Length: 135
Image (cartoon, rainbow, N blue to C red; front, side):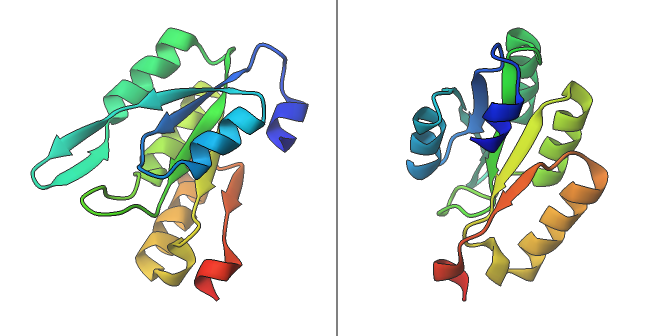
């Protein structure tokens, strides 16, 4: 909601790499925004974010209409965490916001490192943590 309040009215889309949890999707809709679901790709025995599809949607919809990307670090196998570093770089390139859902990630040093690198290498506007799941 804070990002929406600061944005131009035309920025009504949030790109969301699909995960099988509905909380993110509900939060986008509750904020009065329109989700654009980015379907995953199968890579061996893993399910990953389709970075090319994410880039194509940013180009198609246009950064003037996209509020941001909502990525996720915590998923259930075989879905692997989003490549938050690559997404941060893409968001910086297109000038759109990037929110990382890191609800369970605080307990994993590898994920914390990836989030830290995303902040250093690209654009990260907010990181959502969950103390009831981590502490």
